Length: 211
Length: 179
Figure 1 (cartoon, each protein chain N blue to C red):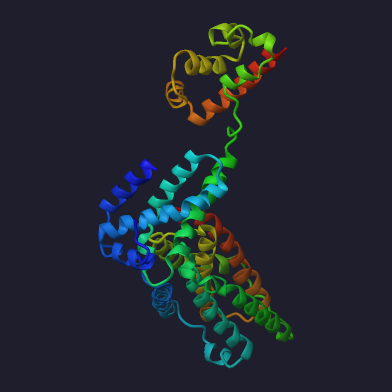
Figure 2 (figure 1 turned 90 degrees about the vertical axis):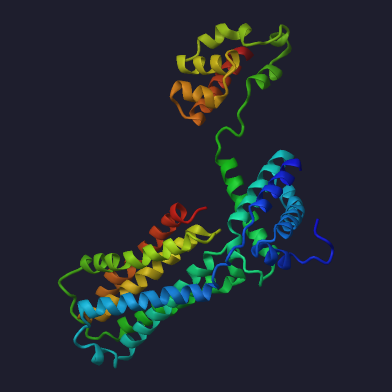
């Protein structure tokens, strides 16, 4: 008990005014704003797909884009909540991406069923995964850097969701840039690798976010 | 000590504003309500004290993640659980948690063997028959009085490797002496 008293006294002596961390919603909005700027700049540099206006008239493409945006928003909010030791007492928000993933998978399934006759596969394959990965590096870095300032008690989960969030921005960029209608290609080379990103984030979270 | 009417959220709010007395009260209150929680999960009192200190330091480091607007206890318990899990994970991952010390070997030996007081010197012949590294480690730990850390530094090994080697040596010795 004596040691505890000494420790309390020394910690109290060290107590300077501290600025509380921003609310997770504000934090995730900050990340979303940064991602929007990054996405806008990237699309301005790389160019939009020429048939984008036409494609947005197609219900399943539009639904895919909207659900990707929501998926990004949900993963960003979840990552922000997971950066707090007590999940900011918003446990449901931490689980928000799960429902959106299910909806996203449902939309992709319906889009695949509606792709009759199937659109031809493009000649490239892994290049899309590589492009998304490269694009996601910057948002992933700033999200992890930002999360390190907090105190996650779920660092693996937080790392996984943070990387999924960054990859969803990358996936959105490529869908808005690449002229490609094959749902099979998109699932295989755009979205399935995102699951790998989630696993890498799980591993990375332990190394980067542990405190 | 915080008075009855004191509210942990308010204390933390004052602590975040730099009030040292409020912060000391808060940490004392926190250790008071966390101690029974830790005692439930840990057997040794010293372990409880060590972990409690670690938790208080973690609370100190993470205090900026609390804004004074949500309940304080769930926040503090989240950190306590996190550190407890870390502690238990390390504890169960440690291959030496069931290490048998030389003194224990001595205590557990049959009467006939322990009739004469068992010391390093009395079994030095057996120790010298051990692999050279194990023998050297036991000599350093039990004859020359080095700690495992010091022995590791002198032998250019990791402390955990020294402990593992010593543990293996104890097991071999126990078998030899029980014959």
